[in-house]
Length: 263
Image (cartoon, rainbow, N blue to C red; front, top):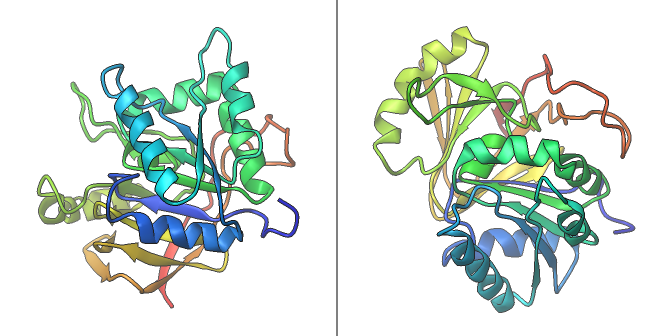
């Protein structure tokens, strides 16, 4: 990974990773990395037992078409070593969709999140899709009863916003903006991403890529960003396990935020 930007690119994807329509997103990432045949590690922690083989097969078939290879990094609490080894040498690490409540605890307890951050700091790309997208933020909505939409802790790569995937489905684009004032009182904005749509970039700014739109809600204000639009994300910060690679002592919290500005 010598010669790559450090840290690597981040992909905030609104869902349906590894499906038709996402090719332009992943081709942009491989171009940013400067690789022709990317080594991809998927972490399908959020998948149910029923959907796990589907997620794995879909990823392998998808990346084969893009001349990539896929390793499955699925940590087991009793022995996370095979999953940690699967991450070795990965150009791209993908947190796939599924059930958000599974992702954070498993990745933190097994040391996977620290390893992912180490790789990202050394130039690997990190992709969060659907529930994986939600978890990349310091705070996220709980989607389960008895208290849906309660704010709970995420993994915390970003602060200052909550992320809402699948924004063009489930009427999100109609009712989610109404949550803006309540979120603003908590010091948060809302970042909504349509399916097969991503913000791709890093410290120098992000671009909207894919089939839909990115929406930013702050209080009562909403802005819509079409594919090709540049969006500057100020305050990009690893709020989780800050410090040099291998340092896992910092708390999972930060007062710094993520700010979106038209560029």
